[in-house]
Length: 259
Image 1 (cartoon, rainbow, N blue to C red):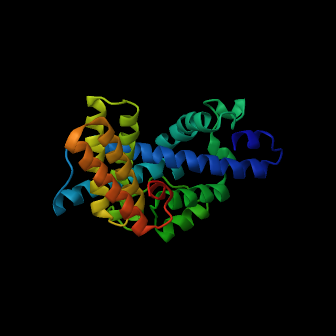
Image 2: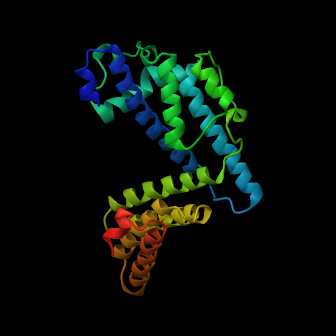
Image 3: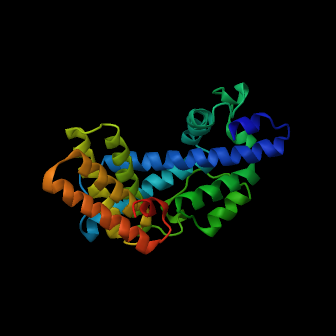
């Protein structure tokens, strides 16, 4: 997309491509910040009160992030003048001009109210986090907003699907990190933590085919790093996860590969 944008002469088409680039970058940044916040937790909530407390914390992370995307505040200025550009550079290379890359250039100047609505809509669809109809109308009208609040969420209080998302993201991140460590004690430690998080994700949303497949991958990786009876048990557990994937979605590619 970055190369394509550089060859375009139409300001409208360049803005449309930039919307897709920015939406993708913001989605990845949002997921990264959720994972970082999750790492700050000292324990996983097991009762209703603790889960609600955790939910309130997640709501806060969500609102703060979306505030930086659509509101007029110092944090938003940092995002649009600096942070988002680093992500775009890493992902799309030459997608921005030299002028657009300077700290003084505000990318929001290229995404006026019409396109900001598109960014906001795409980000809601990509993350599964939706805000109220009233807020969407205000953004569509180009109204100047200072801060978002938890009441602007369509469903105040983080819901099950977000908790599932958090545990899946953390689990997948740990699996990828463990795979880079080879067969070592550190890899086994990371995989044990990953398996715990992925099981939590599945317990929240039993029909989550992606978490089941990732748990299968984690168990396979763990089996290959250990020996004997424990390794066999891990292989059997992985096989069960892949079978569960096919029961949920018969054509799921990762699970289908193993059968």
